[in-house]
Length: 605
Image (cartoon, rainbow, N blue to C red; front, side, top):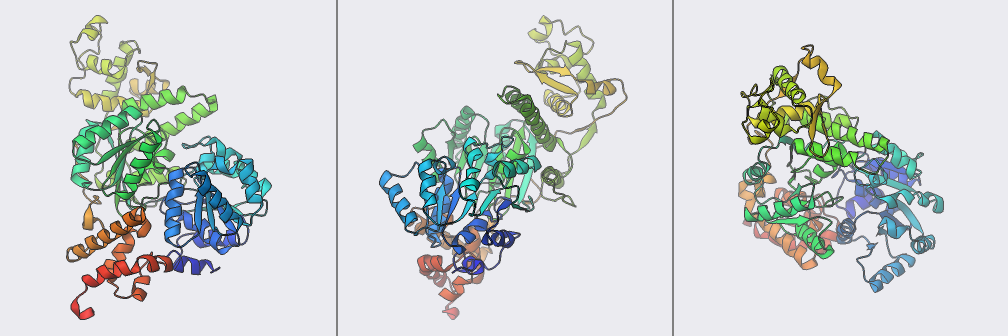
């Protein structure tokens, strides 16, 4: 088969291309280069896998993570594709066998880490074989402005120099205009055709809330909406990852920690369990998940603020790759703002780099504090306009209340000034609320004019005021002790020339629509068909265990749902279900037909 359409139908089991897939494939088929921005779950992999099969030679895929390579190669092999990977996890003799297969023209796709590809020995090996294309996956790793920077990616421009006749495709799910330009420049892809799909993931519900006992907030979210679902909980530090995973296990959840400080075999085992077992929650730093192909992640929760909108989009994008309804929850507080600001200020980058990092952090804070549709703001960051509010984010589902915070802001700013602009938020709030603690008396702040003028608000409400004034630029946080200082921007407000609307602290509440669900309900299965649905899932799980692969490598949930809807009773009818190609029909068809026939009405047999 050399036709892309034939390969799509018979190898991958789909009848139609999505979005710009066909145009990207045609570009590579004609020997031209491409730069592709497509959201997670949008079908980026087919953009290079199909032309690699259709063109003569072997396609080489540059991939940043061993786990990602293994995921994709397992899925390709299940579809009957001659695919392999070369990385440090392989024994010497197995690596030798793969190299021999490459030299003999017995591979269609070979996955390599950038550091492996750049070795002179590997480049020499590739010079000896016919190559169909180079695919550079997770291409945002080339950008020093990005959140997953990998130094090895900077040297990949050598592919253009050493293999000038081999078409190249760079792919990423996340890149603002600056990052796109850097990808094109560093990879010598200025002449490539650019394909930018919509960044919108309408199946994901975005929720962002201020921290107010975050463990209680997370627990309510999991118990009310995500029972038995697979998901990821992101934390900023390794210690918080460990503590949160331990606490979730105590609450009865199957939670596993994942961070770079764990032994490699432990990380690999936890990732394997996440991919292959049902209902596992991984608590992780951002070291986890880049490019993970698990399609049925139903939620992503952040217990700390991501450092940029790109990072937030990339990490939340790991939910709902199968297109099913999924939910993201971000909990943030002033301490996150301070910590990330200090990290940016203390980095080894240039002053320009630090300024850009601060700008990115401010954009992330802006997304948190807005009172309008979050999806519109998120897409606008990537230069895409959504004409109407989405109806599937927290600010659309439960429009936030605002209040005239002018007087409260003036009180707080005055108190910061009266206490010398050298104390943190907690102390300033104590003074405002008339606390009689020792520290207030020690510094004589029970004598200042702002002492006790803020008793109408709780400490939690004052913290929300502080956070919003920091985000809006009226206050800044400085030094090791996170001291509050006034900025020039606060002068008009203090002089009564400006007013400010602040977001009201919302009561904790469940979303009124779009809630994530578990089991058959999540897949919109008729209750009468639930026994068949569960039997098909059990069949898939057994086959996956027998072959040592994740269940989704056998079939995605969407394919099982297609079986439930069509109830095929023959191989020909089963082949018509989306996601079933020739190879999978041959390997797995009889097992699933047996289940389907067990549940078929007697009149159809």
